[in-house]
Structure formats: structure tokens, C-alpha cells
Image (tube, rainbow, N blue to C red; front, side, top):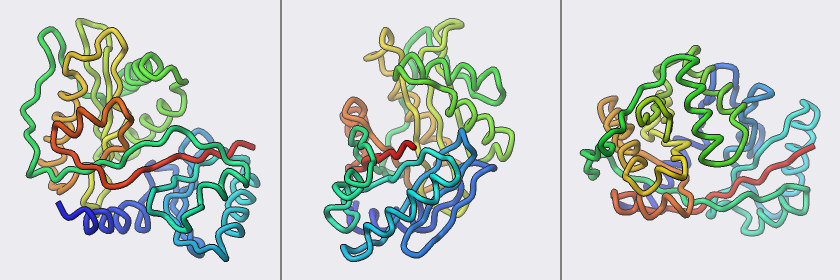
Length: 258
């Protein structure tokens, strides 16, 4: 993989040329910033910027004013190659809080082996309705220890608004949800985004996460996507590397709360 070329393609497709990730969201291009404005419980934030030292602080202040006037908490999604080099420091100075750094990992679907299956006694259930969304949110809360309200709202809006743009799946051991994940498929892009892969603690280390990655990647390949991308945590990065994903850069969410 040509890392520089694929990263540039990712920036064009998924950031500078971003599409809304939900029916009730819109993407706005204002000066040298691309932002998504979502519902109050949806994702709001800056997706891409092309800033220099002279204009960075003013651009940050403008986004803070804009989202504050809307009454929205928002995220500035900072990548390791974004400019200026001290943009993270400038965001912290402006009142943003940095969440844990992740790694942008990408794989070309033609290079992946996609035959991983869940362990015996575990089955994968496609999520198509509110009951399935509730199972995904339940896993999310158990696996990550965070509230699943925003995820529940976003996933339900996607499924009811345009089901072709999202694939969600939950792993069941008997009737108990033990792992879940989703994939976003935005028309006109070459990247399918893998999100939210999480397994409850007692079921980790059994290959379920790997099976969920393979399942979603097979769907992406069938629908004609060339690449799959993941914002990988330190826990998932080794698994993804063994599957053939390659690190391109880091990504850090900077969150601004009113």
C-alpha cells in the first residue's frame, strides 16, 4: 500500500468531501473548515481543516461560537498530519479536552482474508429494527462503560432514514448479546468505515471481534468498496494488524463542552 497516496485519498473522500452520517445531519464548508451539524443527540464536529498558524486561532474561535450558539457539544477530529503542527495545543488552550488517541488503520479489501467466523455457540444477527438497536447499545454500554443514548439515536436514524448507508450486527451467545459493531457506507466514497466494535469483558479473546471485522468487510467488498478504515484503539490495533490493516496516521477527538 502507498501510505501517502491512500491517506491523501482518505482526506479527499472522507474529510474534505465528507457526507452527512445521518439523515438529520448536514455538512457545511465554511472557509477552510468542513463541519457536520447534527441533531442535538447526533454527532457534531469539525471533520477537516486546512489551517495555518496565522488563521488557526480565529478558525477555532469561530467554530466554538457557532456550535455554542446552537447549544451543541462538539468534537474537533484532529489527525496527526493536520496543520499547523501545534493545532492540538491551540485546541486545548481554547477549552477543548483531548480524548484518548487512536490510530487510523486502512486495508485494501482485495488484500484481506475474510473467512473468520465466530466461535462455537455464538451467532451473528443483522440489526434492522429498534430491538436490534437496543441490543447494540446494551453491548456498547457494557463493553465501553459509556452511555449508549447517542449511539441508539444515531443508529436508529440511519436505519429508518437510509438503511443502505449502515450495516450493524450483534453477536449472540444464546440470547445474550456479547459483541456488536456497525459499518457506515457513504455513497460516492471508496472507504467503508468500521465503527463501534466492542465485546463484553467476559467474552473477549475468543475471536468474536475478528469475526465481526470479517463479516463487515465481506459486505463492503460485495457492495464495491475498495478500502475499509478503522479508528483503532490500542486494544484493537494488534488484531487489525494481523488481519492486514496498516496504520496511516493518528486521530484524536478534541471535545468542547459548553
